[in-house]
Length: 580
Image 1 (cartoon, rainbow, N blue to C red):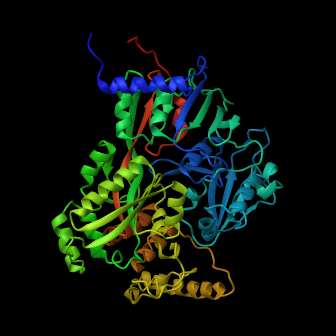
Image 2 (cartoon, rainbow, N blue to C red):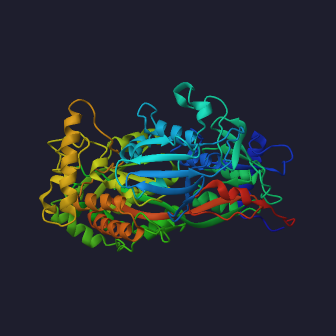
Image 3 (tube, helix red, strand yellow):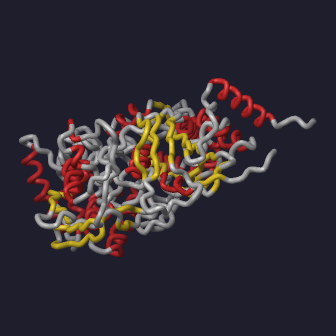
């Protein structure tokens, strides 16, 4: 008798333990119901509030928006039948006829206006509100046609189509509800509706098959189970308690599970963008030579092999191949020798202990993120940089990053669709820390940023035929915003620029890109911004992580999307499995 490989023996032993504990033990599977194990609970299905990955992906199954966006950033109509501009500042949206929510009530312009009005209301408290308040002045229904709604813009808006992806909430249920939020059943208008349990840890949805187009053998119901531990998620598939373990599995777990005949790995190129962020308010990290040195000291190809098992592509910027706004940027090479020279030029000379610089790396407690941070610290040690890895529970980690309490962080942007996300991340008006700090190394950080594009006062833009006009307008807007700030009105500004990056040309180009009316012009402005950002390196692109899921041997027909959305689960079906 030939002994089984050790990995296979270990995995089978763990499967037995899971079955004994009841995690994978269940009665005969309903062929119409499929179970998907995910890495985090759903915090909120309400599309106005679903901003974390698991919540947003599941919310899109239950709610439809006026538009939808594919993995390459290209928008298309969804609930909307037509979108036109009546004037430069008024967009007219005509809904498709006969739209209904899952409870049978009609979906009209009143529901669209209700959804976006609550998003715009600061009292509603959605994280996406500040971005929409910068773009929209009001959303109003037509006085005659119940299927027409008008969006009143604050300025010409190239991002309109991608801004209209927010799922539409039912006004008839929520208008008079406490805080205008769901307290009972979650009702949407998407291709799946919530049924049974929906408590965050377990959400059950069933297909809305009104036209009979669902293929025979595909799921009628999907059950999403949150299992935080990646090993337990894999074992749920191996032991028969789940059909799919959706992403978030380390190479070691994938290899161990695949060593059995009880699971398969399906992988595809992804667009999730993993990057390092530097705090430019830090005395040393403010120096671009230091940031470039830290980037040059990273052997990213080795990191991909060691941490991700080769399941990623080196990134040169935010947008993966195939995105319409992508431009080819030079990859930062692995060059520790030049990195050392740059640190010398920056005055960071090694002391008797060989250390030039001490910094902290903040990460979540995810096993892969901790492993990555330790690998970063090892590579930086070779150039005299001592990095302390500081893992935090996810909510604490994100709170610290959002408040600017970090030196270096590792984050992933799961869906870089809209190129205006560059402004969201790096425009000076979106700085997370807005109060003036006279001791800060950056002159921009020494200025109050409440509602003000501080870069508009930079003399570097004087005389430029395009950006000088932008500068004049921004100065007027800034002075007005500053006067309002004195009475407590800080205006509509974002706070997602965690790094504190401020570059006058980039601010100008990003604003011009957001206002341009045609895609080629937009791409030109965004190309300029991407090249400058690549030179300044407020963030260091690491890679675009592959999508990789673990499936039971009986699962067939799963075509993984680059953006990880759940809609593809509607096409899976059972496959015949040969006996061992």
